[in-house]
Length: 437
Image (cartoon, rainbow, N blue to C red; front, side, top):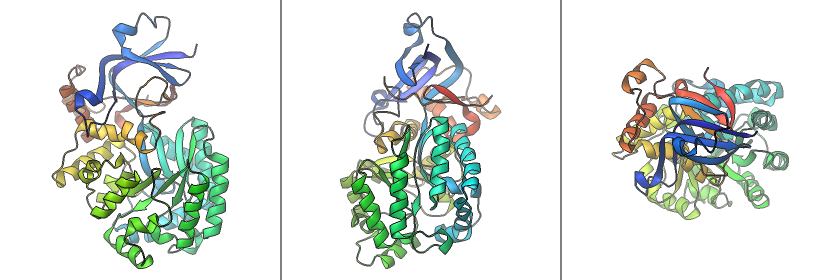
């Protein structure tokens, strides 16, 4: 029998809590049953209403826990796994001093094969079931990553970075070689199983206009791939882009003139955007990956979430490891909350969890497959323990929240105090992929 069921408190989102009320956007079952058949959601409902219907099915029960859709990390660097917490520089200096030397190691396929399982393990133990990943400039790094995610049956989007200038010679490709290597990877991996490809110029300063033109050519040839890059992270970086692209009207325009600003474009950071650039991203229906832990760690600035959401730009949360300081989406949401506080803005617990689940799925045009528990979607979900540490057990009494107000309070404690210890289990297509036990 391929049918299995999971009983616990269950939460997901059926609409966007930035635009409709919590009662309209949040779906919550204090005692729910999630039924999975052959890796897909078969049914969701109250346990009392479904228990007789599934009396013959083995039910896995998680008392005093909470089932959520798997987290979606919109921007994370595979080759930077081992260099988290590299001290004391801002973006451009940090890249030169720490990042580029580490990424050099990824020209060795055996080394990539050693790090890929560690990277995927970290995602899964933190409840991340889908990620948009930058690999290194070397195709071997993409191969290792997709091979490992395929082995786990994990939905992953990745691409080799394209960089043909303003980087050490040992990390540079050429405009033409980046095109041919990326094209070969697309033809091999895009839409193979759960793998998807993102055309990935690292950021405008490390690509010549010719290379950005080739990136645009790839998007024309493979229109259902993604464009994934960095945008307006750091003040000095923005000024540098203007020097390198003197004919452009700004950072967004440096990409736009090569056809890289579109509905399937995901831009990380966007801390220094002008009003006109926010408007252009909204018009193009592009996505912003909000990277709060790296924006504070590298001193880049405070992202204007309210400006982005009010323009109806799609936004998702991103860890941005290794400029980011944690693989945990709870910790990422915690920093996002603090940034909105510093900007005199609001980010509710429900809004934060929406960004990490259904919001991320919409940002990736995968809401037909991921993000909530609608029937037919892929059964990627996590089991969360709100009492996973002594202080959280003190803060969160054993009773399951019944009202949305009580649930919001519990979610907030997870966001502020939670981390990988709060993830009890992670499931991919209904199969256990990580268990804290």
